[in-house]
Picture 1: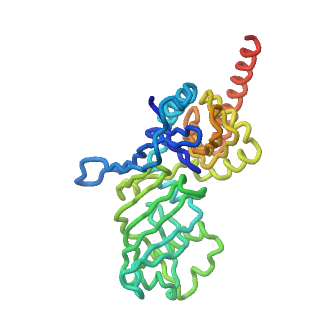
Picture 2 (picture 1 turned 45 degrees about the vertical axis):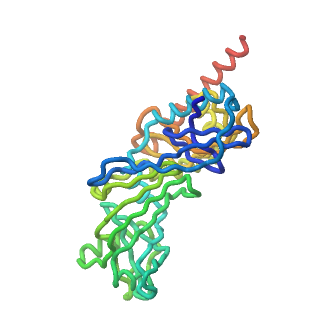
Picture 3 (picture 1 turned 135 degrees about the vertical axis):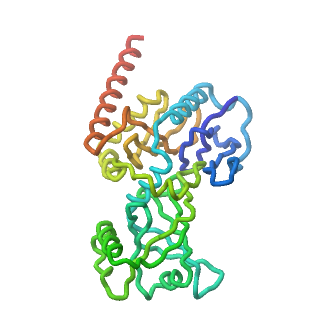
Length: 340
């Protein structure tokens, strides 16, 4: 029997290339693929797997559940999504402005030093920083500019949410015009950062990006070419995503559940929380308990828009249309069942 989906233990992000199945309390053995973008000189994908438990005995999954999983897998595979490069640029651009910087420790040779630092990306997506001369990471960078910066998505709450790691060299900005530009960009992201004008603070930039590693959730990881990353542009709608998600989650969660039921018939969810929104659709954390099981499931799905949204107002137009369509479909289904 073909079992489609992703193992749901705790909170799992749906990936269309992967199968899930919860059989009573017994998880299915499954291989979760991590696909890595090919770099120069590489010829094949690297595949890694997670051993997720013992396989269930045949026949423990109902036919209706198998059909639902197949339909869900097909829907997710065909759901439009941002390209990885655009998704990463959007994650970095619309992050809350803080990241974890790992430097090569000057005071403890051979060990990495970690610091939570403020940043703002420039027009190429390169992080800009303003550091005090007293900070240990400043001293580390002046001794060795090699470092990495780990940036989590603004909505990050766990391993199913996106994060990106930029490896490169961070050096002081020398040109006066570049310093003025960095100041303006940083203050737009951090309007209360009055201290950037203190005399002992210096402007830094990740001048060279050596490698970019991205994790979009379980079984979804890869790396990007720095040149492609710097040439890409953030999604125009993603910057408004948190506000849209907050409004829908607080005031219209039933509409979200209805839209899911309309696009994926048979997927009855008890809760649906939008985690992010972009011009092509939404990611939604859903909760369900299969009819033939008492195993509670929570995972993330993609719910696409009927077309690409152009701005925040257009997103509202699309969601209203999807909600009306879902309501009409539910009414038709109810009338059909009543007639039978």
